[in-house]
Length: 358
Image (cartoon, rainbow, N blue to C red; front, side):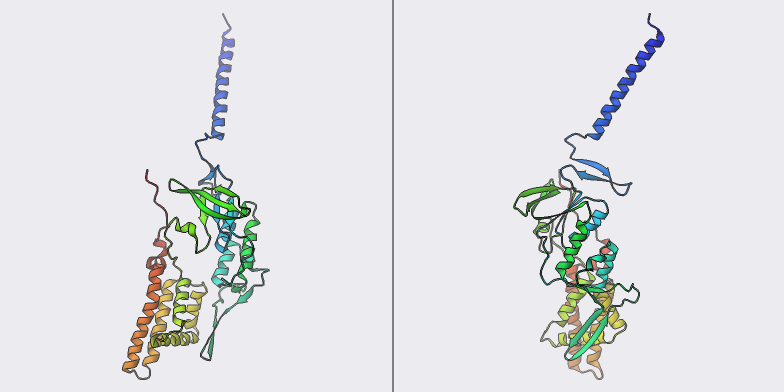
């Protein structure tokens, strides 16, 4: 009869081998997911969250377009540890007259994103306000920069040089890849964008995959139209710029002419009368309510100019038309931008597509 200690040793060895085999197989299955599983989850920068990275590509995010928005986004995501693939139709320096003035509010955003050095070495000029000229009269409107650091001001530069600096800044990160190519279509599967199909500089057709694709290829993008109906993005600066454009455009209408005169004289008063509108236009005060208050203050100021020293039926009629003209300018712009988006932006949910029906 076998020694019981020997039998116990043999039994323990067999059980140990079985346990070791089980652990090895389990660990192998954990490290090598089945082919049916298209993505693996990895820890994100925030240890409490998880994100899925595509096994089909080497990027976490694909960005279409390397303009101001695309380059800034690529740099920000790259600093956050994301692997970013940027596809831009033309990586040479843009040469067109557009976006030559960066408002002080925009420069503050560059500081927030760590991109303030992008305005250096491109012959940018500091801008401290505006000068208005009308019918032989002139007035100066300064940015209200007293509460900010001395480096904060507007910047005027060649737009193409600025964009190239932002691209260089983004490409300096090892996990950001800039590639010249033309995205021809978005790759969609069951209502979800999986990546893009694009043509390289040499004409080669390629595909790229990532869990997230962001389209930043300009206001004339055909790709965004394939996803949704473009909607105006509410912006105090856009609204004010649109209103000023309509006010100062030449018009034979007497009420519109009085509105132009009132606007010029209102801004020439200085103090809060010029500081408020300039704060709005410079991006230092983006509150829409302030915009509406100043706009109608200009209209009321214009009516007061008409009725003093003595009102007449003709002047009262022009004053009424002035108020009507002001309403006809500001309200359509607010309606186009979106009343809720302008005055209650935090209540507007982010746009998303409904999940595909199964």
